Length: 144
Image 1 (cartoon, rainbow, N blue to C red):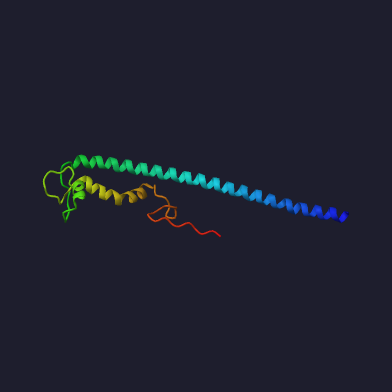
Image 2 (image 1 turned 30 degrees about the horizontal axis):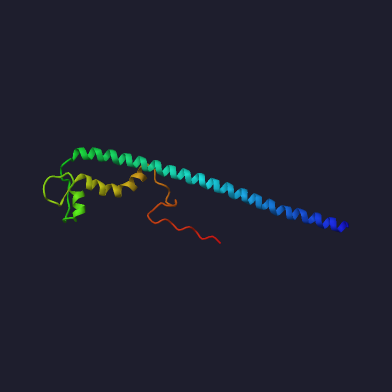
């Protein structure tokens, strides 16, 4: 009987340590997941703020430039664009020369290319390795 008690008592600590390990692992996983959610939320807020600042800057610059160049052709397009693009590029201009380009169209084209550089200049761009940092995001790593 003594041997039965000792074997059952030695089996009890090892069997009880397994649930403790599982509990500690689940707690650790929960802490990491909550930290990840908080970091993701902070990153989303940061991206929203930077997008808002850049939008306000571009909007103010657009208003200023529009008042300076209202009704004036600011560029010549080297070809006659298709009808849909003509309406955008010749908006607010007098005359029938469809190769004239309005300030609004030129600003639109430039703001597309300038937006990323403006974010970097103002210090709002996320690090290069951040997820979703480009047109083609990195695929998720495979887990076993």
